[in-house]
Length: 156
Image 1: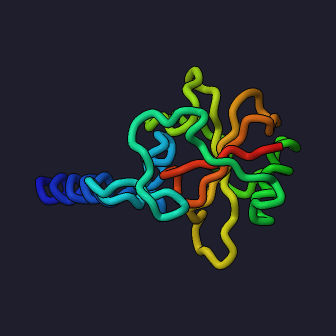
Image 2: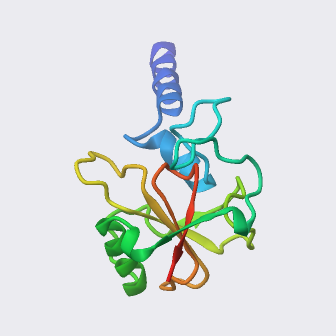
């Protein structure tokens, strides 16, 4: 009896420490807006390779990208957002908390995150689009290709 209890405790502890799925540890940080790939104490790198500013990033500090400058997969993601889905991943459309305040500050529930497919990637990759406002609206969207370490506003 004691041996069975000890075994079940070890299995439970292993599941908690190891994560429950392939992307178990990524899902927790992704929902908070943190970067799972970022090592502790390492400054965030922007798309240009320069350290990104920590703390709040003012609206004017965000770079911009036109829809034509985005990868083709991002255009497809924007089309799916406008159509309301269906999205390729169950995590698409979940709340993005903006806890690092890299995007303009808005009330909780304003931002939602969507996957931008990465050709050749065996998982969801690092590319995302985060949109604010009502669902199916793409007027206040941001693109990241470095898993939330930096953003560029998508210009209309």
